[in-house]
Amino acid sequence: MLKVKFCLPRSVRIKLNSTCQYNCKFCHQEGNSSAQEVNQDEVVACLKKFKKELFFYRAHYTGGEPTLYRNLISLIKKTKKIGIINSITSNGQFDPSLLPKLKDAGLDSINFSIHSLEKFSFLKLQNHKMNIKDGSTWAQNCIDLAVSNVINAEKLLNTKINCVVGDEFSSAEDILLFCTKNNIKLRLLNDLSLGERSLQTINFILKKSEANLIGHEVTLISSSHRLDYQLNEKYIFGVKCIRNFYLKSLCDGCQIRKEGKCYEGFYGIRLEGNPLKVRLCLYRNGSPFVQKLNDFFKSRQYRELKKDTEDVRQYLLKDDIIEEQKTNLKK
Ligand code: SF4
Image (cartoon, rainbow, N blue to C red):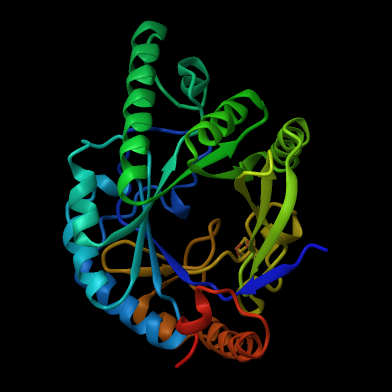
């Protein structure tokens, strides 16, 4: 019988910047497409507090494109010193010489956002104004650079491809094949804006490839969960899913939720901007959905998160806890 594993949220998503070389149609920019670059010292101080009070021990850097954040190396060095496990999600459009520098600074893992390996499908995912000739040359160059950085990263760091699945299956299927062949970790994600259509495509791929469900990990106090599938009794890949989970002090009575337009629910804590702010909702702005740090630590949402975290921690410590949290959840 399939055993479901439970864990506490371990990671804070930090939007370092808003700039990116791509302009993907489905990109939610972590809820804010114009947030300023964060101040690295503010981020370090905040992570220290979250680590102590909410048991977060991972920082997940996003953007924009986080490799365009000019203080990335220095930030990773600083967070490493306070015991944080660092990962980034990148589009792979960086100079290959950056990889060893990131590893030396203390980067633990890198997720590449790659959604197609074919130039015209890639271009279809972009809001672009190029003519087809220039566009296809640009797309091919982007794909080549990303793939070459994936292959190099795999030799240095924990490396994974994140592939957002839209309503056509062949792009994700190509990526699944590439990852199986090169033994690179893969996570399929549904396009939140497409709702059911994207989930149907993922189901179609799973069926077509005869993948077997072998694991299920649920993150408590979050809408996030992951299903693990196995191919050919060898290769394992994940499908990241969203379940209905809402923070009471944030989501009760929410109109967007009532209208069925909240596709993410309460996912977790995001940090953004300068001065640093906490974002709790992908779709809404203003307090309490986005709060100044000082306000957040005094807020109902923080109290609810702290209490739930402590309750779940006590429960998990008695129960079968995932390996990674065995030490991290003990005070
Ligand atoms: S839109 Fe935001 S506030 Fe409303 S239910 Fe979703 S996560 Fe909660």
